[in-house]
Image (cartoon, rainbow, N blue to C red):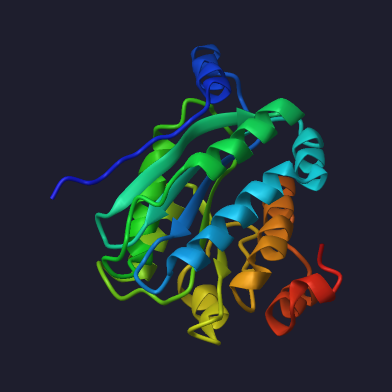
Length: 246
């Protein structure tokens, strides 16, 4: 079966991608790997999408980007399910100002769901994201995979093997487990999924909490600073909107 690959971008994003020829260095290459497995119904999937797009419209994210030495990061978004089922839905984009952040958020909003089931292969998502990082046109000193999902690995090779292979390539992996189905998924992510310098997990108690969790996670990833244990505990224990996480 051929692997689906769908890329949606606004005219602004195409202009930004054209900057690849300048090979401008950025502070971070970031792959946003979004769960599209069978346990994620369309309502839950839309909550994930809205959470990501809202985060890139939040001034805290741009403030974190502008605080870096290069004042820019490169980001792409991919959807994942089974071991070979991946769809890159927003291409590599350099973000360094309000216009590029807003354009990336709009591209997330415009990208339809490309996958519907096929198992939960976190290992496949890591392997694919590592390949995407190798193809990024924007060189960076840090490379990070951001995995979000609501289940443990049940397809493909062991997730630990994929994690270790990514670490050997100098890639760090952070996790945003959604605890709706597996209440201890954060523990699983900590033991099996994340890795690399400063790697961390921020859990969302449920899909309604995803937006606040991803905002805090992105700010921490861009800054290169792991969030405090208190923040991670709050994200798991309560509705983020009522716990002062935003």
